[in-house]
Amino acid sequence: MLVCAQGVYAQQSRVQLTDDKAHKQVEVTIDGKPFTAYIYPGPDVLKKPVLYPIRTATGTLITRGWPMDPRPGERIDHPHHVGMWFNYGDVNGHDFWNNSNDVKGHGGPFGTIVHTGIKSMKGGKDKGELTVTADWLDKDNKPMLQETTTFTFSGQGSERVIDRVTTLKALNQDVTFKDNKEGLVAIRVARQLEHPSNKPEVFTDANGIATKVAQMDNTGVTGHYKSSEGVEGEDVWGKRAKWMNLTGTINGENISVMMLDHPKNIGYPTYWHSRGYGLYAANPLAPSVMSEGKEAPMNYKLPAGQSVTFRYRVVITSGAVSPDELSKKVTAFAR
Image (cartoon, rainbow, N blue to C red):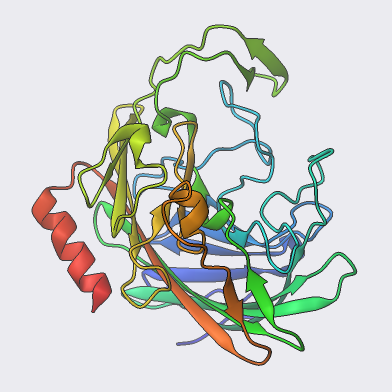
């Protein structure tokens, strides 16, 4: 596969990756249409690299815009919820999850994940692959963990797929992931994919300005979780499941966002840290917290010099997905 000077792969590749060093991102397109981007603007903007934004095959945004690119009617909570990310709330006492330039008076000490390089990048007829590295830094900017992540992007017809395989290596000391509800792999979804709610909130207006709303307008808010175990709605929080499917409608487009756990992952089947307000997360490392004390703590310990790997798949579909299709997708990923 040939590469031009700008890092754009040859046109015969259906899945193309473009290394935009000036904007610190790698753009992903499928059949010439934007799909997502791996962005690493640095700690002055974001305290970790993320995939942002993420689109359906038709181009509909499934991720929230705020705080990067506010859209009217969005919530303005949790400024650290951007796109799709991977981090954790207690790593050797450091909070990687909540770290944000806009978070005030929220505990700490905070950890920061800093992009360190692109190891490989290639497009292709059926898929594109991006392998990146990052350091998990403590409060003194000393690395605790070295991360290597391979993203595989693919899609046919109305479907788009993201595979994330992340390996964490402990460096010169043991690293403990203490049971904490804030983890591990997550997406912050668009307003339309939230669950309807009547609680007072703060939203953005057409100019991106914060506005307090006493009674929420649920027009067009249609999100609904359903797990592999048949649990639905906001009841999925704190429950184990092999996969989760979030469905909803945006501008008349029926959308399914499915997240799959892998049998080789620690804590399989994972607990789900998924909320009606748009946080869609899988957390396998905190059984005592997620079960509200029914299970013993894991407090997963990674010895110095050792590595652990996590595997997840996200399937985004325009249109309904039948139970049989869901089953086939789960089987394919497990293989």
